[in-house]
Length: 349
Image (cartoon, rainbow, N blue to C red; front, side, top):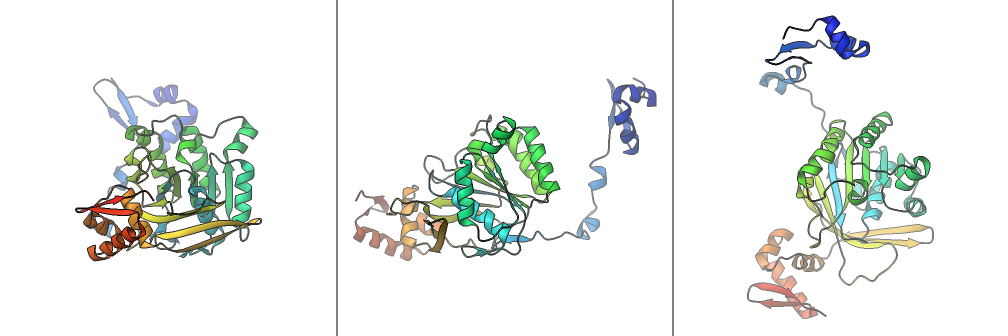
C-alpha cells in the first residue's frame, strides 16, 4: 500500500487531530498489509550509561516517620472492626495538619484527599471532627455525597472515574490519596484475580506514582487474618504494608484498640517497632495513645497465625530463641499455651 499524503490523513484523522500529528513529528511506517502512523515515545528516553549517571534525580521526600515517602503505594489491613478507618483518618489528618501520628513525625503538612466508600456521612464527619487538632489541607470524598449529588455510584475500578480523580489530584496538587476501602471502592473485579487487579487498578496506581501522588489503600484481612484478602499481586508494587492485629484480652469499647506492625517495608532501614494503639472517645473528641507492643502479645499472635516452633517465631519477631522460650514459659504459666515436642499450641482459657 502506498504512503498516505496529507489529504489522506485529513480524511482519516480530521482537522483537529491532523495538526498535532504533524507537529508531534509523526513518522510513517509502511507494513506489509497497511501503512501506520506512529509517534516516537521510547527513542527520546533511551539514555547511554554516561548520560544516565549524570541525571539529576530528586530524592523522594519523606512524608511520615522514616517509612512513608512521596509517591508510595501502601496498604493498611486487618480484621473487620479493628480500627483500620480510625488509623487511616488519623494518618490523613496528621499529614494535612503537620505534627505527629503516634511516634511518627510529619516533615511538613501536605494536601491530602481521603476517599470513603463505606461509612455514613455523619460518622465520617464526626470522626474527622473528633481527630482534628486544626484545619489543614485535608479534602474528603464520600460515596454518599457522590450518589446524592449525581445519582452515580463511586467506583474506582471504572477508567472514567480514575481519569477524573487523577486530573483532580494534579489540579489540586494532592500529594496523598487515601482509599478506604478496596472492597467498596473497586467493584466489578474478581478480588482473587491477579489479571483483574493488574488490568483495572494497578496501572492506575502506577500512573499516580509517576505523578508523585502517594496512595494508601485500606483492605480487609483474609480468613486466616495473617494476609490481605484477595490476590497477593497487590503487594508487589507496595512500598510498605501495615497490619492491624487484635489486642488479646481487650474489652469491647467504643473507638478502637489494636496492634500495628509492618509486614513489608522498603523505605525504613529497620522495621519500625510494633505499637499498641488505643483510640478512645472522650465527649466530642478522641484520645489517641500508644506504646510499644508487649512481645507476649505478639508472640501469641504469631501462634494464632500458624507458626508453631520457637525458631519460626524467633525469626519473625527478630528475637533470639532464648527470648522466645522465656515468652513461652510466661504463656504456659498464664495457662494459655502448651508445648508438645517442639510445637506450641494455644489453649482455651
